[in-house]
Length: 392
Image (cartoon, rainbow, N blue to C red; front, side):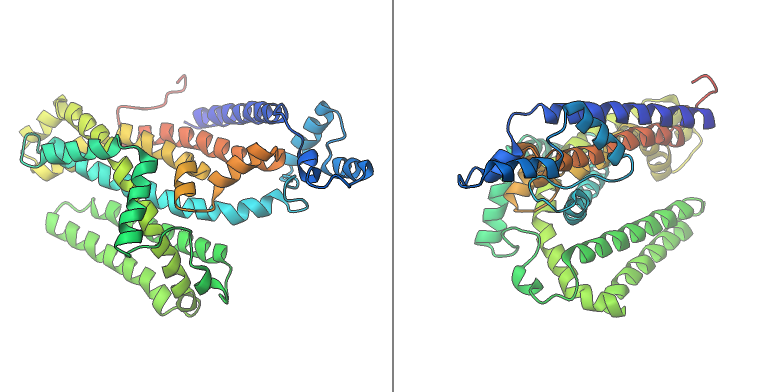
């Protein structure tokens, strides 16, 4: 196993180097001149100013020299300055936009994967029962809907007509005008506290699964979950710093509801159908027949045997979806006016802002490589039949 992990890490490093090199040359080959764009609106600027700008941005050097300097700086964690927002460092821009995208899309991904897996498991286990056709047809209809149109309809219905949710953006400027904390600080606090609470709840449920008796197992799982949720809410109501942040965190959460709901409705059907198909295939396996022959309860056969094996393709899809969550959704961030990494990617490529574009793509590349690596490891954990040998 150690040899396999080491070999995969070497492969990941080599692939990332190739990815970074190809990305740099592709972006460098894009037509346009960032300096000419900045000075195009003022014809009275002398050529000396343009030449000085080229020197400051390092664009007066030969292409290979620029590539060498960038690669050296990149691997020393110096991503340079944004061409379009000079002299603002690229790191500062990413620090500002990244939490917004992570909070939105990670919440949506977890929500629609949980809903899709629960619905798919239910449909497979109760195949042919009442309600299966309605759930399947409704899910497929939402999955195939034209997303930009559907997102606008959601905005029109819930924000414009019913006045239940905000029309867009990620916060209310009036509430944040005299806020004691920057928006990104509240974003990060929400993200980490939610992540820690989720990990604790997940760990409690894993420990509860080891209890054989059903009643004590449910009691431990529910009591632990309630305690974790109470601790999470207590921080925002009782904690000194959390209580001050609470109205601002509530404003962010309020603006999250509509885009997360829209993404969940559109995407959960794909996970539902994937889970249903995987569950139906798993239920035909011999080990499911053996488990039933042993007299195990139906819920144990369903959850511990069928659902666990059916998780393999769903887990692959989930990890890869989380790995690419950083790029955000161009359409989603545009429709809901959510300023995140999706907008940064489009603007940086359009304007020829090479340092910002490469740094943004690099985050996506790293998370995609790590996601594929985690999928391989999770397969060995979820399926006992998969093991890594010394030669595998």
